[in-house]
Length: 169
Image: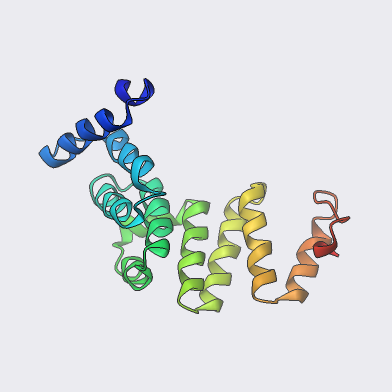
């Protein structure tokens, strides 16, 4: 962590990789490996996210797993992951709005629009004030051309959003 804070990314990565390989890594070591590899090597980051989830059961690893998995062609693996969660794992993710949004994106990636919409709606129910989640939900409605639902959402949120934007009229 100190090496990373000092801008010595390569050294920090080597130390975290050694800790991961020895089985004594913490959450921050996996997060560091995600930071290092997520943009340039999503397949490698995917593996770290998967292993981080298995070890710590933290939603942040599911978020990273879905993001890197979608970008590296692991969409079907992500569906399998969601369908084989234990009840305890599902309970962890079900309390987290961003996890529902990640589910929505995975379902969208395999063409399961109903499940995608249901997941996005659940994310909004859990975090109705989160602008990123609400925005992602609105963009999903736009992408799927669910204009009636979009209009309804815009009307109910008129005081909170800028209706001068043409795409929201």
